[in-house]
Amino acid sequence: MRLIQKPQSFYSRNSAHIILGAGMLLLISAVFIYGSQYIFIKKAHKTVGIVTGFSLPKGKTLKRPVIEYYTSDQQKHVYYHSEGTNPPKYHKGEKVKIYYNPLNPEDASLGYSFIPIIILCIFGLVFTGIGIVMNR
Image (cartoon, rainbow, N blue to C red; front, top):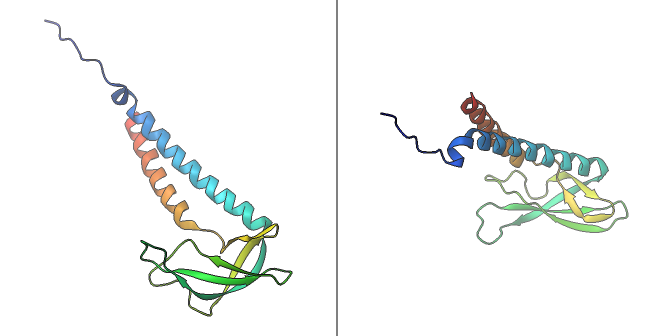
């Protein structure tokens, strides 16, 4: 007697490729984020800012530093950092390096933000590894 096999679903047939592709996309995203930060910092002007306080956005639990800085033409600007930490990484009155776009001084950064890059790399490597193992 011959058994009739039920056809495999699309996911069952291609799960290794899907997981491998997801891992590769995560790794490519990490490289893209690093590259965009690298280009910004290379084109940006560097100055020293002073931490004037902290902001606590609604619904958030981590305080984010507020930094005042002056551009090369002595225009005062305020930068609200997008990442918060506990305990705070910076202290009120601390001097920090800040990079700003000379064409748009409100576009500023404290340098490389490695948190999203690390997270994307970890998940990318895990998914890629699983995809490779499943593909064998």
